[in-house]
Length: 131
Image (cartoon, rainbow, N blue to C red; front, side, top):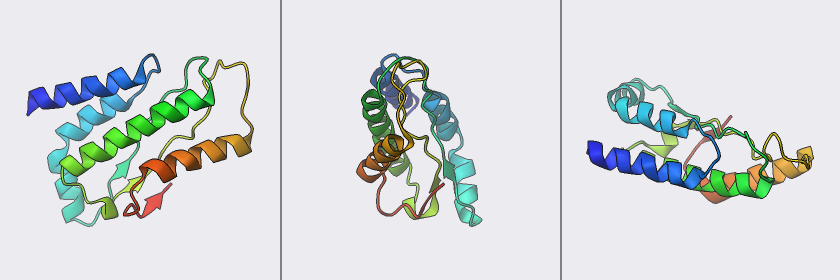
């Protein structure tokens, strides 16, 4: 199981291809907190799922969308593999924006459009809340 977890984390890192992310740390903590997750759910607490994709770099918003979709797809796959009940979680996603050093800044409307696109494509309908 440990070997499988390392392989999965490595696969996430390959998807990021140059975009620095805290997702790996999040996934490692999630893997080690299996018992905490059970305790939380058993006591009526909603786990908050909050992987962060850091926006260092000069990539366009389309690249951030591509990476965010892959990351969230893997996150929900991992949660399902660990029997997390989607109806019992809350999401705290990052907005989809261009890299901090990208020459063209996106308007709030464009950021909203790309963020909502990612959420609609990747968040299962069973998830009750996005913060």
